[in-house]
Amino acid sequence: MNEWDELDGDEPTPSADAALAALLEAGPEAAEHLLKAAQELLLAAKAVVDAGERALEAHRAATGSATGRDPAAGAAAPEPARRVRRIDLA
Image (cartoon, rainbow, N blue to C red; front, side, top):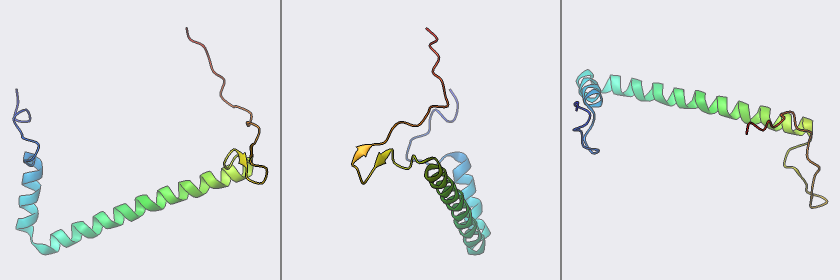
């Protein structure tokens, strides 16, 4: 049994407690700096996700498999050729 086994779910972990204490000791400038850095990190992650979505949409438009359905006809479009072959391992 170690120190982590005795922690209650509502209590901060020792490392989180130490980080919070250091942040409070450093002052409001440090807290503001960390919040701005976290915001920039989230904006960068959002940019990566948005770029991936645009690339996926472009790929789907190029291959004609945007939704798998023809909205004008209301029927399912033919399945695109599979590039992955299933292998029965049993």
